[in-house]
Length: 413
Image (cartoon, rainbow, N blue to C red):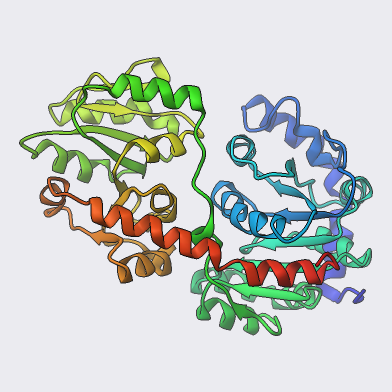
């Protein structure tokens, strides 16, 4: 174990105060529906599941997209070992959606708040053989505690753009201390490697984004059968996924079509269902909402529910990726690609620039501007959908070397 430097030592001392406020804070979040009533105490380090027998690999990612991206890596490691897997995250949505998409031999828990007592309780129970952290969410107390117990640490799928680096640079000493405890660091791109090195990371390597290799999202069989039955005899189906304010662009293009398909809008924030329905009416069209128990019997079906994206990707041969016509700067295009849905997107893709570039190299996605979206919606994109699915399959095969390195790091090869 490396002794903590000044910045980490101060953090660890201050983290002892977390229990003074944690129960009250979590109680408020519970009252607002932001915590699961039967699982919120996991954030105090109290497990709600038993530890499985044998080797255990603990993987952590902060939110929904990051957690789902771990599934391909878990599958690759599961194919090379008999280890079990514990995935931790911090958000309620990530727990609920992952619960419907769990890989084999995998369970989920919430990461405890970063207080020494909570983290110790967590580690005492789970006793992981390897700790894998994803993207850029590092909890200093948990990293230090794992290192102190001799648990090998790895950071995978790291992503740090210039803005994120600027925020962390003022804490360079703390990050250098943390990175020194990781035996393997892999990043999504060269820019991230440079930023990690500037913060003190050593030996970082570039590995393609885990999101590219994530298995397709699953769908509840009963819900899938019901949705297919409801769509029998319907006109063609089009999906607008993870939309924010960009439904203005989509609705304007959709309204201009002579022969309209059924448009499914799956908003990034399901609570916006009523707002989107009002905008559909403003555009001179009709809308129904899945959250209200309404089916696809209007111009637009708003699927304002959580955890059903795998269902819509299966049903829709074309997807307009949300967030790409505004300041959100895009969402993950690999999810529709994995299900063989053709990808249309706007010009704002900074969050997933490399993923969109890879799809374009294989002619598996198409950039459209607001004034050209309507024409694109009227075209046949079946070839693009086939190429997108093939690209995702290739990406899953590329994870084997990283999986082998991680297993060797944990002595599990």
